[in-house]
Image (cartoon, rainbow, N blue to C red; front, side, top):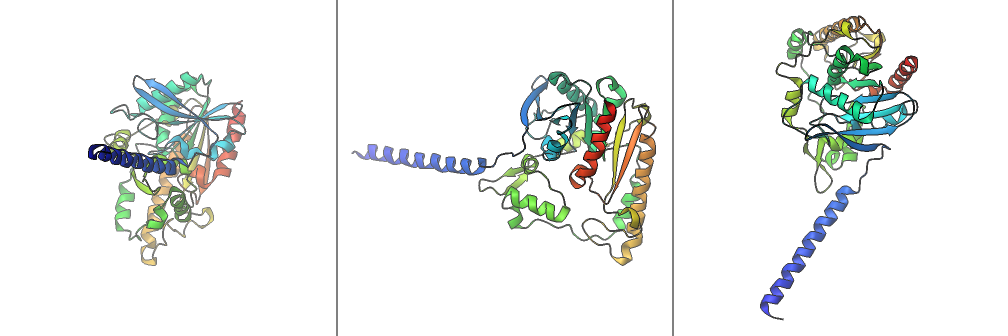
Length: 345
């Protein structure tokens, strides 16, 4: 064999080994599969923009789940399966996140609400109940005020956002509070998504579905956790210039169920304030109690506002719960939602 032929053979052999190695890496990364029994489809909501829609099945009234800021619909994995025992459950991943399109514009709440309506149309959903977490409350309010003829009811999962809330007092008090640095994951906690999920469960008592974590973080070739997938500009676009999303809850014309949480505060021990991630030092307790007192007053104000909804409102206060209340208190949320949906029929 001539020198040229030998060189060519060596190059081909190296290329084969290279492709084989890459193939092995891909196989390692792709071994994981989402255990949630949902069907995934993509709905076009405007030219060039598709949203990931999850369908967990079930029978009865359709229920559509909307995640909080930075979250895909996979955050409801586990919870949605249980809800599907009584309803037909769907989840929408909003534009900019997860497997949905990431266009340069269209992140104001009016456009996001139109995206939701486009999904309702595509799936032929007849008056669904729409449940939203956190920032999704903006879309819920718009649906209830301007598109009340399209939905049967709204469920606010700690999502009573109100642009009239004034955080100046809380911010001023918070600046005076000495906090312990938050726990950070160790290299061992970042070696895999399963390890990271266990760490999140250990430090935050939240069983975040692994499929959701995989929409939020890059997976390195060795299976460890990489950087954020969610770009900062999407967050800013959704929040708006000033983060000011004001809604007149009195104009909501459909029935409402609202879960309101008080993180880290037991109902029967309101004076014994403890933040979730650390104990408050005795010399800082007065400041901490003032922060929480201000927060509770704000929450109570929101409750009074939502109770003015024209369609009527039930409020469930959940003490010592996480903001992601459907993960920290799933039984309580499921019971409330099932009763709410049943009463609509």
